[in-house]
Image (cartoon, rainbow, N blue to C red; front, side, top):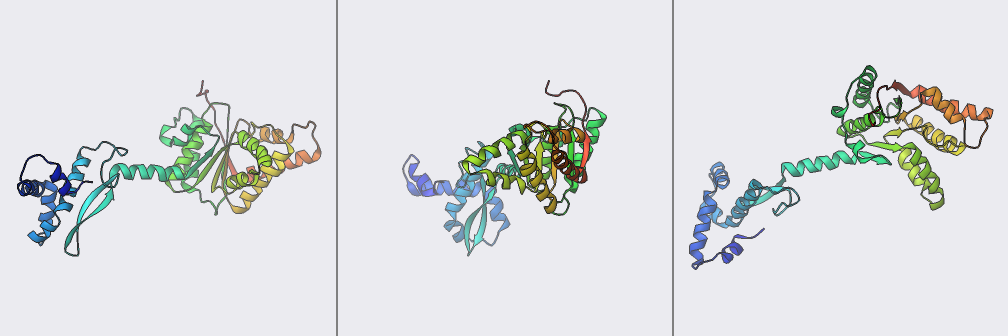
Amino acid sequence: MESIGKTLKEMSGGGFEKRFEKMKKTILQDKRVQAFLHEHPSITSEQTERGMNELFQYKSQWENCDKCPGLEECPNLIKGHQPELQIYHEDLQLTYNACPLKRKEDERKRHASFIQSLYIPKEITNVSFDDFHEDNTSRTIAFTKAMEFSVNVQPGENGHGLYIHGPFGVGKTFLIGAIANELADRSIETMIVYAPDFFRELKNGINDGTYQKKLDVVKNAKVLILDDIGAETMSNWIRDDILGAMLQYRMMEKLPTLYTSNFDLDGLEEHLTYTQRGGVEKMDKLKAKRILERIRHLNEVIEMKGDNKRG
């Protein structure tokens, strides 16, 4: 931000004092400057004179705001901030407050910080309940249950979640995106994970040493959403060492876990039973059943029906 002296030097024409007096007159006639002086009648002419540079900057920066070019192009001394005049130790002083655009951007970033996602399309993390269309009974029920969860969830105090299942394309992933955004409004952190890619990434992490770090980030999420569970190629390792252990930890810590799946619970149990090694042993059935018992105990089941919205 230029000072009044620099501005005067750059002005054309002779007579510095004449130009200075003309500029002072312009500054003191500014409506905002006049309003400030009117609100502080005790300000003396000496104080006004000493504070002429502050008054100049106050006027100039507010003129920038009047012709706002947008946050990125903001020419003010502190980008995205508007000046405020104050009296400090008998002198005029400028302080700065975030403008509406800056506050909106800061809130957007704060909101976004509460939603983490892995292998999920970016647009899903931006949807809200206002975008969800209740065009059949099952979607209306799903919407209602999702809203109830978003309002009542208390991570660490109650580990209850939702199990949302239905055919491909009925809006299950869309709905969990709306849940995540609603929770962000409550400053509750949510991790949305596309389950098949996450399990695959964990397997790769064994080789590059990132396995435990990646698992811990997801395992400790305040609210975890496993999207499309059941679409992965099942193995004993995924079922027992990853999914089973992770859900056990989250149950003990009372951290809610939500799921979307094309399978109902019986179908998911069957999927967890049959691993890629082939054949089914008694222990496979038992381990799959244990996982399903945790899910049944902690999650309200919601079935979504309807046409394929992606078609």
